[in-house]
Length: 483
Image 1: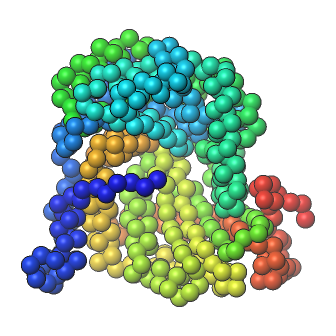
Image 2: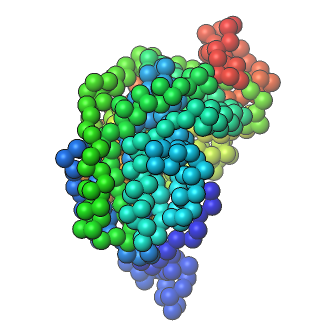
């Protein structure tokens, strides 16, 4: 979705101004390089309180424009889904914008939104579900009343449920129309085979098709409780008045059992051996991807910061990684990434190649994995620059109330507010040895999943059969095809 042009922070604007050759003829060579020591955590005006029922409330005052964002973040998502609920957290997200005890159907719901001047949306990920409304500051109280009714008293009317099932299935269809989707699903299933449903955000088609009101209510009663929810109010607000409104509206929302004590998330068994998966599908390019089980933020937070820095270094066009793999012509693009999670975040190394270059590209990627373990793989300057740029990006994400709210909502669910509040400080402390420890612990000699998406004719031509055991071949639906 296209986003409007945003006001640049002063620090970024200055860098842009000088880099563009503006600024009264001052040469860029006359400017001092930005120093990491000059970048500190944002001093947002925040108030963090916890109500008696366990509801956490974060109020962030930012009087830039006369708007306020109200966000509810719930520790839910694929991680809470046993196989019979696979995909229903996402369906629940859709049902959040339907009828409740105060607004009995979607028509009344949307009418009230228009009256309050709201823009709205929701997101579902592996470990977080978020709902957010942005509206004029004068309508704060009414907006909080609106959020309360949606959180506490959904109706899950059968007709609306059936219509939304069709909407979610149409999203499923759009994903299935993209061949890389099937490879991602197959690789996730191989990487987290025992508890695949808890990593499968989009869900299982049959489970979605047969979803019931009773299952929606089960999700509500287990997870949509005050002691599993963060309420963020960010924007042009008065903290004292806002806290008073929240306390009055939400004090009677009853606390419930901690869902992750009663229904704990099982441990993901480590991958025991390498897996190779080939998906044959008519496709112009070849997608090659490696995946590992990475760190859990609660168990190894240092590794998550190291992974962020390492990924950033490799993502720069000037890096040796990009020069060897992309500028050489072997790959059209290459990326290395880690997804921060409370429960085993995946690490991925992927690239797109032409069919003709795919065999050489695969060997080059394997060689690059060996190079990554060398102590001189990146320079001190690259390390320092990555810290600066990630710190600046962290500050830049706090320029609008919606971005602020969604940032804090996600990190509260996944890692806790402290992780987000002290991100820059912890980023600064990462040294070369920490990155080496991340690679040694999660990449070096560790079992991985290697996946390839390739046209059948290209596979036959460029990867002819050998005497070695063939990797699993998948149908376009992601199912293994018997040899």
